[in-house]
Image (cartoon, rainbow, N blue to C red; front, side, top):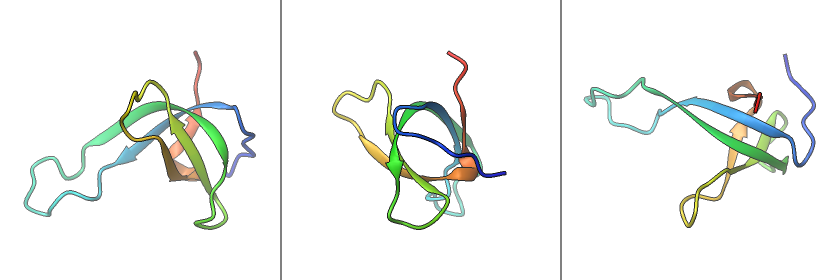
Length: 74
């Protein structure tokens, strides 16, 4: 189910790190982080730009598929 997000919505992103090598023991480890919707991404429909919360000097804005975004309760 695709949700309509608006800029400023606070979200939690849960993603599997698919960038690790196949031989890595941590290949399918899920990572979650808090963020805020910046707006729709140019990657395509169903993708959103999310600013990672509390990432001082690290990261910034990431393109995230809608299937990995959920509402943040706090």
